[in-house]
Length: 157
Image 1 (spheres, rainbow, N blue to C red):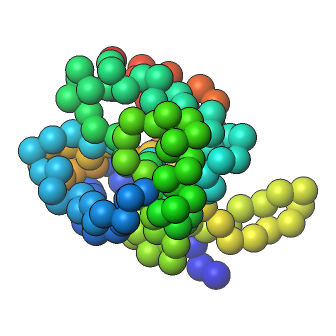
Image 2: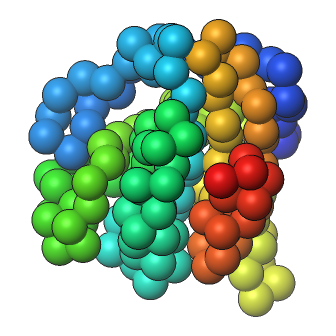
């Protein structure tokens, strides 16, 4: 499979409408006029993804005070996302992209390797979208641990 094009700072964030953990549609363009952190993660309730989600949750107040909304996107179905939210007491929307269509729009899906084996999967990635719908940051292959602290540093929060 050919690698998907990566987005860059200044690009318009691709719009999407997908379901949240409660089966309600969420549209990125509904956030125009607001700042949004959109992060892609491989699977709810796995150790790395739980750590990353809890880090975002633990930092929600400073992020909100700086005007940022957080949206997490994975290929998980809404029911799995709802149990993940409930188990971890997460206070931000988790969005379901089971066909990885939105992942691919953002270049957050591609070749990964583990133990010398290559396969296609979710590339842990984070995007910061400004009030005009443009990308302020496009971070690919981020680490689950320490990622939110690095993001806060980059955003001056």
